[in-house]
Amino acid sequence: MKNWWFIRGLRKGVMTEKYPKEIAEWSIEIQGEGTVNCPTNAIKDGKWIKERCVFCRRCYPNYRPNLNPRIYTINKTQPLFKRSFYLYPIDSGTCGGCNMELKLISSPEYDMTRFSIFFTNTPRHADALVVMGVMTEKMKEVLKKAYEAMPEPKVVILLGACAISGGIIGEGVPLEAVVEIPGCPPNPFTILEALMKVKGE
Image (tube, rainbow, N blue to C red; front, side):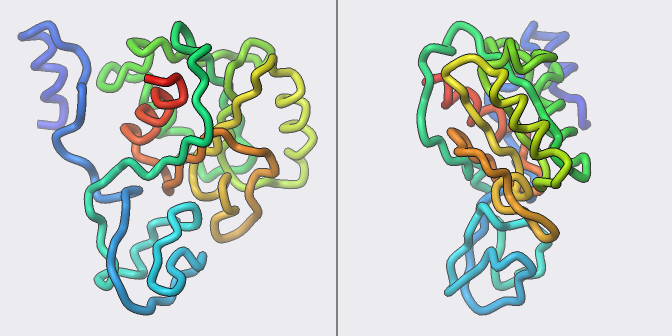
């Protein structure tokens, strides 16, 4: 039953998951060995480069997922945001996958608000800018204005392989990231845990 968590919540009063018992086999750590034909050079000299991986599975069966979803990188924490952490998502050119997974963390199953994480509709009220997608020419000025409108400290979160490295078809976002969350698209649990780590939790 896909919505077992909802039934459990009605019976026991527990509405959200502390930790998923099962992790989907996508956008998680990959291990293996051998030479493969990777479209983004995410496997080089036998090493998996998570920032470049679009999880196309062309490396399978030489490389397989090991069910570790903690593939994010946190360069700096901001304990200032322990009481509240407001995110402003900006799509610089996505396929829509990252948008859907980011939106999912606000669903009852994950419920980001229990960790005092919220969305805001303006960068002027944002603690963090969540950038998704490849960097398109027409979005460069938009991204620059959104970043400049944010109050200090300016936290930039790059969500997905396209924003971090450009994926297959483009270039990455030219902003110094505090957080990088690889994936194509990232796992909702990975996104939520990375956001909590930024807050110092």
